[in-house]
Image 1 (tube, rainbow, N blue to C red):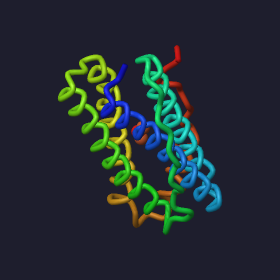
Image 2 (tube, rainbow, N blue to C red):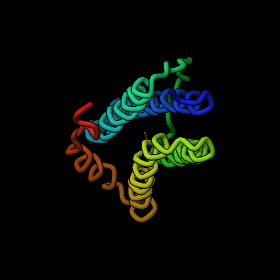
Image 3 (cartoon, protein in one colour):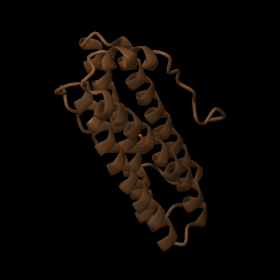
Length: 170
Ligand code: FEO
């Protein structure tokens, strides 16, 4: 069984992963409404990944013989100022998630839960990729934001993204 503190933290993180999925669905819907189907696809795949992160953590809580604590999922913003604004919010959000995941890793160590610590390390590594990916996209806006072709190029590139379940056996 998980200690109560870790159960609460992991349950809260499951909620955060689902909030992340909601946030990316809101961004996908925004991009779709702007006519950028490729960018909408990128956000949609991101939302699918977040749901996979949440389910994997939920299953881990059960595997440890505990029962997840459920709570309301916050509503995401309903609109964005621009596609660039959405990606700026992606980076802000992923930085916030990184802090939350790191706090779970610290808690697992404090509780001497080495299995829990090993489990959460996958998410620690994933957050490095998540932040790097958002940072790379934002760098394009910094470097080429004055070029009206940027959004069309991004739209074409992002149409190719395909969801791959990071936990295929789950
Ligand atoms: Fe579940 Fe965006 O990290």
